[in-house]
Length: 231
Image 1 (cartoon, rainbow, N blue to C red):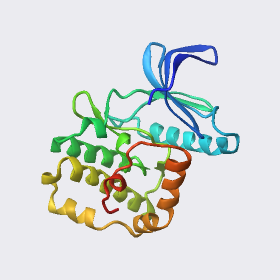
Image 2: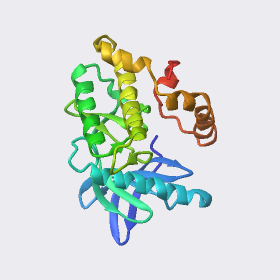
Image 3: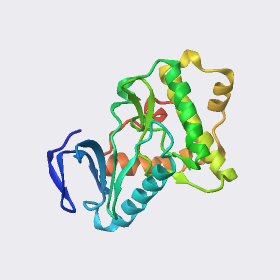
Image 4: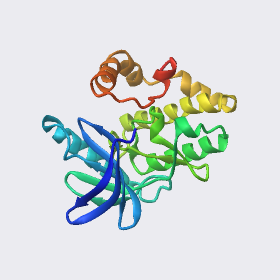
């Protein structure tokens, strides 16, 4: 939901046509213009005082992931980073729940993109949310919102589990929008969530949903949970 629109000044640099895309206890996310180019700004300054440290931590996680993914097409690029603000390039397109990709080529390209992330040592960790997957103007996939991502130098067993969960969440979306094109291998991956995923669903996820939806008022579609499907 668009909340407001105005011009914002960052260290003397005016960012015009700034529109708030999201505002919560962790700050604001704005769509703006920086030196004539469309950008997205994550701003921790409006965060609740007791949560500003966590907002900054998530900002650093996103910046670290984007820096590692400079060679991966379909991922935003860092334009400028400060202590409380991250300015990244804007990916033009629609979030998955609006774009509704039904072409299997989209999911094939998205899986290839995921392999690029994982080779670079980055697990997204939040692909259950449909708005984090973009259907770009040419029909190709994009990925955004890396604030919960995990960046590593050496891919451990735990990282490989996280990477597999990235793929499994992508396949859940494929099951929704392109169900007849799932291979037997993909169906097998969907049928076997990791033990960590099962534990999350039975313990921490209900608490997470209560906090994000009841207390914070987040309304974005989160994927399988919103469709009554299993983890």
